[in-house]
Structures are given as C-alpha cells and as structure tokens.
Length: 324
Image 1 (cartoon, helix red, strand yellow):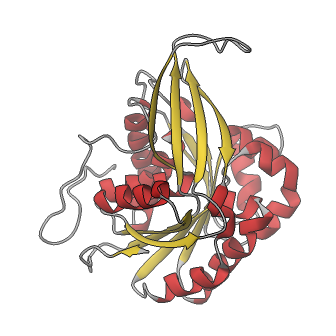
Image 2 (cartoon, helix red, strand yellow):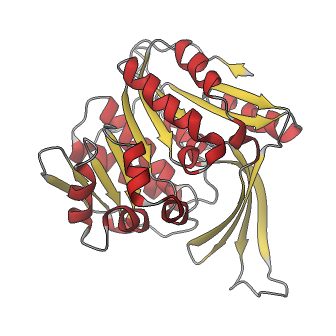
C-alpha cells in the first residue's frame, strides 16, 4: 500500500526504514504494583522508532518516505492512514503472515519500559526495499532504525537498504535503537553491519554497549572510527558529535518538564537529520535535534502533537527556526 503526497523539489527527501507499530501507552499514576493493580491513563496510537522519526520530519516540513511493513489487518491500515494524514509518503509491505506489530509502553516519572511484539516488521522483504528506493529517485538520504538489523527476520532488508542507498549515492544514517538487543548481537557484529555509514546515533546506554564505559566524547570518537560521524544522545543533558577528524562538538539540552520520554530520541533524530541534510553543520544540527526532543518530552505519546506543525512556504522550504 502507498500514499504519495505532492512532490517537493526544493528540500531533499529523507527515506526512513524500520518499524511501524501500534503503541499501547499507559501513563502510570504510581509505581507499577507487580501482581496487583496500578491506575493509569491508557491511549492507543501509532508508534515505532522509524515511523515516529518520519512523523516528526514531516511535521518539520521535510519531505519524507517511510519504508516498513504491517499486517493485513485494521491496525495496519490505521497506522498507514495516520502517517498519510501527517504528510508522510509511505511504501509499506502488507504481510498476510503476521499481524501489525504492537508495543506496550509503561511510563512513570518520565521513565518508560517497553514490551514489544514486532509482528509484521519481521516480514519486510529485501525486494520491497529495492522497489521502494527505485521509485524515489529524488531521495537524498536514508535513515535506518537498527531494530531492522537487530532481528534476523528483518536483517536482510536492513542490510540491503544500506547497500542500495550507497549504490545510489545517498548519504546514510543509523539509529542504534536499543541497548539490550545490541548486547545480544554483540558490539563488534553490529559495528561491522554499519561500518562506513555517514552518521551513527546512539543514546548513553547504547553507546556504552558499543564503545565501552567512558565519557560521551570518548564514546563518540571511538564510534566515529568505524563510521564517518557519531552522535551520543544524552537526553536532557544534550548530545555530543564526533566527526572523521576526531573533533568533538557538543550541545546542552533544553530544560523542560518531562511528561513522557516516549519518542524523544526519535524526535531528536528528526530534528538533527532535517537540519544536517539541509546543509547545517554539527552544532546547528545538534541544536535542532535538542529543540525537537524538548517538544517531544513535553507531551504524551511518541508522535508530534497536533499543535506542532511547521508551515511550508511557496518555495517548498519549511518556515522553521534555524539553529545558529
């Protein structure tokens, strides 16, 4: 199934590949009472690291395509319709063999715990990736959620996407996704999969798995030895960027009340990528990521709030404030 918005010939198109799921979000009124009852506000909406990043990119006015998979079920159709409504172009494989993925997200005091069934995301065919990229010759950048690499069921599609993107001259980035799956596959194996990508993003836990227990600047430098650029995300403390020359740039976080951290890293990635692919340097890109991450933690859920939209001018460039 696909949705094609009006083409935007001015700003570069970003293709995002990875999970599209249904989020069942429970904001707990208190600590989880294991074996008993805990009051919570519960909502159901679209989620998935890649889909969230695509949604935030679209909200910022960046032309964006999501490549992913859903089941042949009402949840899958609803998830695709949500993204279409946000302005995301979708290239979605519909699987008859698995349901649309579901993630249960438990939130308390700004922390979140996820219980995941990736469902149809594990059925994303490498051939579908080829066709989706071939149909979008104007794409400039591919951003891959590492969840696609971390499970054997979708790994071929993820590796194929990186190879095809390089062959087509696209720049590439990978979000390291999640610390525990990284531990399971092993840092050396994962870093070999992403070797020579243009940008690797990892949060503090993921960076520790991949680069050892050292300072964020040292982690970023270590990771940049195998990729061209590396960013270590530090939540409210900001982020650190290391480039191929070993230079390190950092930025402070934006102090805001944390309502729900779900999707904050995905929003950060969207802000950073939108700025970087537009031509901003590392510091400005980090600041753009921090600004969007601050919006994300200030609202419930992983997607942009309805009030967060950037108008697109007649020239096609979003009228977003630019970080200097």
